[in-house]
Length: 197
Image 1 (cartoon, rainbow, N blue to C red):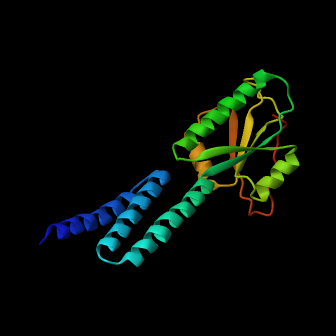
Image 2 (cartoon, one colour; image 1 turned 135 degrees about the vertical axis):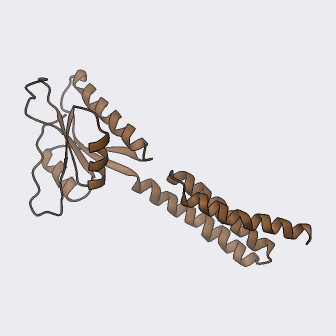
């Protein structure tokens, strides 16, 4: 056994180790980086074993192109699009509870490597239509009825995704919102209540 054989065995041993790291990675961005390393190791193995055409194919298609496509898919799928109504009030103090609520949403989503994207609509009908047509994942509106205990107008957060509802229901501690789930596949979807933020 010469030195080249030892290097080949070491490089080949890295393949299953890296593959296991990819499978057990929680952060999708770290998994993408490890997938790139896995592809580079595989291309190196093919090159050492005198298969340059397969090595080039693995490097270009299996690593560069695949990682690029996966990155685009991960980036677009890990977004919660939250529809809100356009702000028509000029009182900066009224923004404080909403900003606190959005900060708590972001904190919960950050744990799952997701990001919050706020989409602004002009009226309730457009907001409800966007939820039904799956342009957004959830809505956040201010209720028009006043809470008798706190004299504040709480927010209503409605989501069409059961998993998001389950996560928010267990982790959201803000008393400023009423959380609800709506199944948009039903023929009868309740209308959103609320007013402009």
